[in-house]
Amino acid sequence: MPGMNDADMPSRLLMIEDDARLASMVGEYLEQAGFAFAHQGDGASGLAAVQESAPDLVILDLMLPGMDGLEVCRRIRSLPGAAASVPVLMLTAKGDAMDRIIGLELGADDYLPKPFEPRELLARIRAVLRRQSPGAAPTQPVLRFGSLEIDRDARTVTVAGKPAELTSYQFDLLVTLAERAVRTSRYYEQSREFGRLVARYGLTQPPGERFYICTGGGPGVMEAANRGAHDMGAPSVGLNITLPHEQSTNPYVSPHLAFKFHYFALRKMHFMMRAKALVAFPGGFGTLDELFEVLTLVQTRKAQPVPIILFGSDYWSRLLHLDVLAEEGAISPEDLELFCTVDDPQEAWNQIRRFYNL
Image (cartoon, rainbow, N blue to C red; front, top):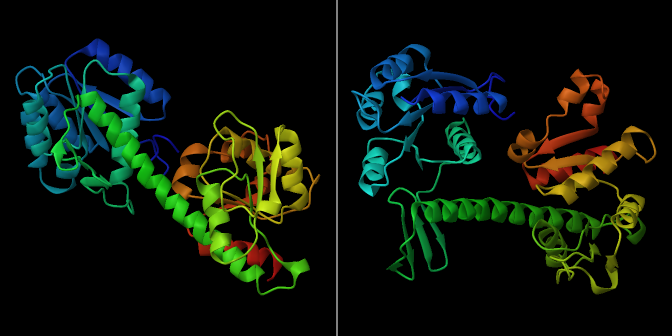
């Protein structure tokens, strides 16, 4: 859950900030987001609190009375034991790039200039905590996309070997978009592999007993699944819909199995009439609409039970907290067993095979 650590306890944040009014507003916002929040108004008391309470993350102001934020960061990194590795997110009202560089060199994990949007602070906190969580993939300091190279540690960007001048905000925005592209590319390849697995099995079965890939016919992970079937020489279905930003069917849908709809309701009806399983990759409102439609139909027995598989545990665990519905009596605890979460294409296919005893 947002703001939760692995033991399902609220992540503990310590803010070291001499502006009590700002700290109060930030604390209220972060507590509403599910975090436990504490505040210290100067460097010395903040450093003591790090040693005593072992927070999960420190939000550290650069301009502190007495001991400044750079010195606090340096001393944190010199502490004995696990306290030395606590993530530090530095805040500053100064625009001096040298301060940012020194802060990062001293061991700060991220940097946010004042004034800042609370939502951006929250997003950065969550990103830092995800990177620190057990099993998190190591962060690559340099991201490369063709001739574009982004060095996160040095905060530099080059295009075809030539430096690009960006403001701090522009650099942070570019990094956010680049990291999202990396995550999306992972899901693309996994969806493509899942398409291959389904098609490979289907080609070994009589036509009337085959499984076929059926997607929304659009780009991204939908295209990837159709492409996986195409890789194996198997047909696949695309149920596209007329949208301002999604006008054409992806090129990997079998032409004779490409359909266009104007209404979501009819499209979902055709999905459910034929579906033997639902595998939901990370997506937006449309994905959620289709997911909850299937869950509701299966829960209320208006449709035959089918495997409902959520692909990408990191995404779905942060987005959905359906156990709350069971706790509040809105659904039965057994309803939480209507779906499962996986992170591997083979495991997704194995879930389907076990369901149908294939």
